[in-house]
Image (cartoon, rainbow, N blue to C red; front, side, top):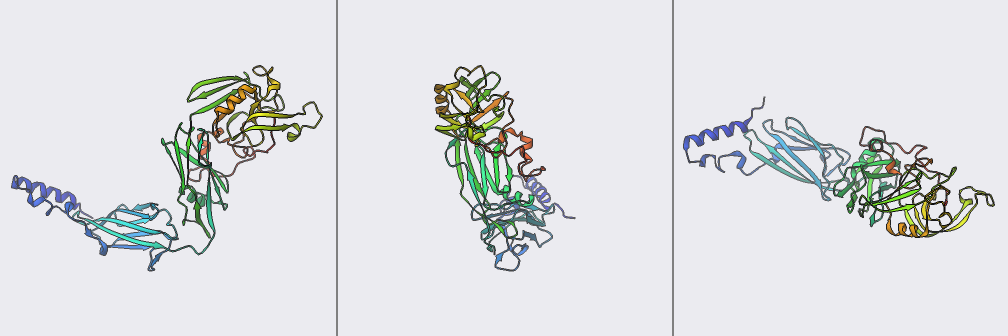
Length: 420
């Protein structure tokens, strides 16, 4: 059984101080092992696993550090590459062994610092620098982050597009751990796999107003699967503006616009009539178009029928790829605030549409309540990400107990062009 030399040393030092009165030189820097200069632990430490006997480490294998002297113990190990990526590891309870639990990157240079302690409690140090070999395959998983650099609303998700499909949960977990999202102020968030090549990241709640979000990948050189290694990814930084949320109540025919939780405008509107009901739920502004030509034929309405239309539309703020907008509808002013007469869009007067157009940006939240329409699709028709509660959102992560799968039929949109 290993004794506890550190406790023994401290007790003997205390007794000596009591015996010598004011004289403490015996327990000073020359006598106390914890204040001594760390000894070179090179002869007591062995490196194995990925290092093997070659000049370059094998990134396919874990890094293994052991202490050879039974009276010594490892107290700490840090392994970091030249890019600042740390290797996670696990230290045995008795301090005899440390091994890495996250993969090494290929074609990288690592510095490993090992701290030890001998039977008297004196500290030891050993530093080793090594290179990892390059992968033999040239297949790389590159990542493209979105949105573009700029300022967005608090509902804007982060997107990650992968150059190769990733299907297995273990492989997805490697990718997900390497995709880093940091925000100031700090917020809780998670990735969700939309399909084999796309992930979305969102916070538990909306982003804070005037936040800075930084996105980067630690995948370069990391093995993901056989013949697939992490490739390039350009980091992304974007900011959020004010917290702007527009809520349309289809039953009262009114839109209320909030800015930083204060009402800044109340607008009479019309939404989709029976058979063309506006989607319920949270949508995110995708873009703004000063002019859009909208035709009934684009959504399956026969030309010349009673529902047919061909209209110039101004101040159109897009919220779905299938053609749902908030826009000027001067032809329905008489119904705005009292009836739903549109083909799915939220219509308002030209003056109100211009005001809305000027006061929202991409990423702002547009929510519809009390419509008889379906709920906004989660994926495929814009950003319906917020229509999943946090628990369900997390099941799309490979790092949780849920199963990360692609969207089901109810989550994927069937795209259709603009409607009014």
